[in-house]
Length: 195
Length: 411
Image 1 (cartoon, each protein chain N blue to C red):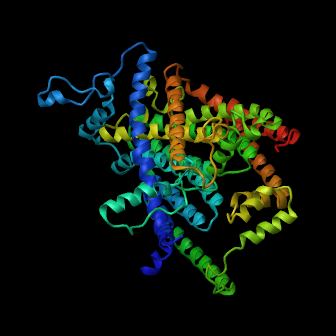
Image 2: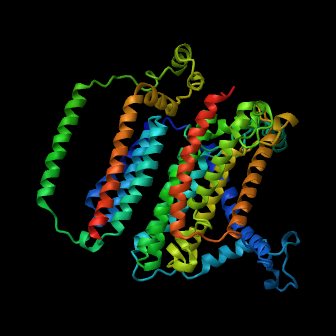
Image 3: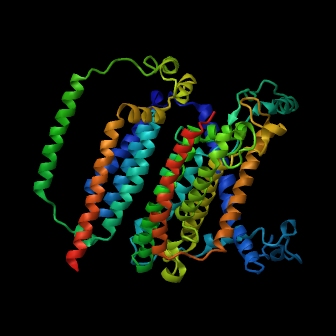
């Protein structure tokens, strides 16, 4: 991706991220967050991570944010807009933010970025494809793509998730299931109390 | 500034812009306009009426005796008359609305609907070098023989050949719901608000079955790239018409059952996602006046209308590409009209585009037929259908496909 587009999408992500905090209207905040997600998705796509970028929009911007917006719209907007500034919250945010900034600065100082450009350090997809074809005979689609010089990011991600981390994925699924059942039980109980 | 623009590929950029302008402004928007006309004429046929049949080129305005009816069919200029009417009407903004979001909402409906078209392969490929003979003749006539000619590399007929095709379409289409929700909220009025709330609940519910319904399809293709899916179907029979190539194997015929089920779920969910009858709860006239666009007039209302039809066309395009072979001609390889990479003549490439558009037109007529023959669901029935029937059916279909693919492996 041309670096011009990187700056554009970085600006969209950060600018709308700032709007989330600064806007007085909750609906504006929610929509700015959605726009920020879209900018972030574009950055993912610029790194050849098409699947993650698309899922970022589909799950966060498309579904979760609509639910948020749904809840915000049923609230009293006036009361939210007229709220006084909370000094303690601002101070807390600044402190937390600077701690995070120090942490990022420390990590990036230790982690040495190599001086190679993208052209010099290009991924050798064909070699990876040949290696994959030799070791993994069950999945010809991935090695075929790699040999053709295409990065099959979705398939590689699926392979890592279901082959390498299959057990972890199922544990996560179980956790989410427990959460869902818990929500159903809690909301049912509330109804009975009300009656 | 120079180094920022250094790695932009200019040829690619120009080709993409030409394709975007062609597909959006010369194909989808005219199709939107004429599907509104088709809807009115077709519904008239169903209800034994005549429909709009008078509009022609208004020569009587200039003192001639008769208006010209194009091709002798009355009303073919109706979309233009509608467009002029929408543009010239007063653009009224009610006093109590939230002005910024009131103006933003129509754009948020229209833009995602048009953006989704970039991953659709609307044809195989165009070998423009076939035109080089003609081009050098023209150059000879104007006396400048050394002008550039087309390279022999064919241009693929898809704007962005992404490796996440259908997911991209779903992702951008899911942003379309913001337009409806915001329209309902910003209008600051009771009925539009109810329409917006209904729309968001409905779209989130049916997005699940829409996404799950294509998983069996992806399992069969082993691929998320819509171009590769079309090429596979062209060589080996459509998913729902496996009559040539590898399509004649036992595995493909066994898989026909879950694929048919997938197709049904996909189409029903698509009706719900595009807010078409029998699922148009968001603008249900009998209960909500006109739903989320009650407070809108003139071109802003027209944008909602156009957005709905554009979403319909692109949804049809996706259904055609996934299940009905995309641009592929039925029995193409058997009668010599099949695609072969880099070796498809220009006329065949153009014919493929024509076939794709023809299939979409057929699908839109199906949409219209459903709209004018089925009554509207009640909102609770709609939610019940989505969560209790469609969702489970789609999940079951995934398991069924996996089982059948294990029992009778492909290839």
